[in-house]
Amino acid sequence: MARRSVAVVGGGLAGLAAGLELSEAGYEVELFERSRLLGGRATSFEIDGVEVDNGQHVFLGCCSDFQSFVRRAGMGDRLWLQERFQALVVTRDGTSLLRAARLPAPWHLVASFVRFGALGLRSKLGVARALAAAARNGEARNETFAQWLRRRKQSDEALRVFWTPFFVPALNVPLEEMDAREALFTLRTAFLGDADAARFGFSTVPLAHIAEAAAARLASVHRATSIASLETNADATHLESLVTTSGQRRAFDAFVLALTPPQLRRLLGDPALYGVPPLEIFTPHPIVDVHLRYAPRHPGPGGLFDFAALVDSPVQWVFRKGDGYLCCSMSAADAYYRRSTDDLIRLAWDEVQAIPAMRGARLERGAVTRNPEATFSAPPDAVRPGPETALANVALAGSWTRTGWPDTMESAVRSGFAAARRIMTG
Ligand SMILES: Cc1cc2nc3c(=O)[nH]c(=O)nc-3n(C[C@H](O)[C@H](O)[C@H](O)COP(=O)(O)OP(=O)(O)OC[C@H]3O[C@@H](n4cnc5c(N)ncnc54)[C@H](O)[C@@H]3O)c2cc1C
Image 1: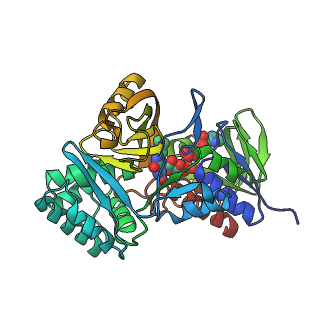
Image 2: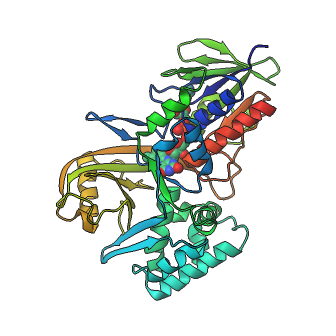
Image 3: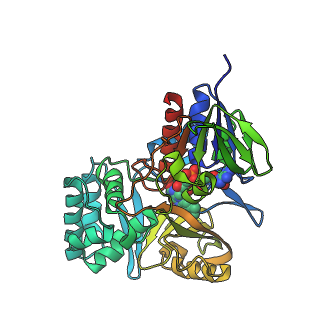
């Protein structure tokens, strides 16, 4: 019997995860990606002869499906993960280290939090009470995280030094727009569940290499091939074929649409015809990354850090990607992403001077990557679609769909696996 054919539209992590799962289950998978690069928002490209990621991407120890996807693509040994959660928090007055102890959660962070010098005692007690409330109670109301924190009487200092530097970059949304349920989910999953969950990790190879490895497991991949329209049968119960922008028509048994909300809306025309709720409710949020190459004052390991959180800075997180290479990540960067490259390099370089290991270092060159649609959020009361559509042979995937996770690589991979299961059982 001929193998069932599936078209995957979109070669980001969601589409690749769906394709990998379906290929492993014996389906004949063809992927259509409008860009010549694979990986979507989690890709990489060359700037001045150096391959850089489309913005720094981190995952946490709790991102189990993302790690499983990378392993199944044969790239598991290219992921770096901290042995224990550790973050240097840099304020204008100095640095403090948050470091997990070898104790079960949540006790693994207690000793370090008690010693955490960046927060005064009153704020610390307030944060501890909020963390206990997050651990205890069930669902949040339909409210923003800022409202939830106000109800928990968090001080300005706690907002500046703790909640903003950790949650704004994690969800890429200002606290005033952040869905409290997503923030509490992140808090519980990363910090309160399992002592290994909050460990930071990143890919040691440019992200497009992971996407390429996953794509190599599919029957065929059509790059630089945009899908312009879809064609259903006469009574619109099934999708029959897709049409590329160059007019090529291809028929398949089933389809996975792994696009962002605006891209999906453009392709579907009227989402309601597919049983998909309105997609205008999803708001894009920008991320800017500034890549800095520098000569350290003292070469060698003294004072090194993997990852630093900067307080009261438009650069929230700084990653040391290698000797003489920092990636500075600016989340919820609406106020910055239109600024000139030189301006952003200057700004980021000034900000990293607060990190002791950077003092006296000399900037050699910098580059900027900007993403106006880095992640998508929805209002707290929004209905997100899952993989199912009104057409039995069409499944949706995408980091913004109903996976239970915020818009992340983990969510993208989970959505892809869920879409594949939907095709297999549909
Ligand atoms: C700068 C930046 C930093 C980020 N940092 C993190 C992080 O630290 N940790 C984390 O977990 N997540 C991070 N994210 C989010 C993460 O990248 C996304 O959640 C995830 O990659 C989304 O995957 P996706 O497959 O759902 O969507 P996408 O990657 O957007 O994939 C959609 C694909 O569809 C293609 N496409 C669109 N229209 C068509 C068409 N008509 N025909 C064919 N193909 C089409 C697009 O070209 C694209 O490749 C970051 C994102 C950015 C941009």
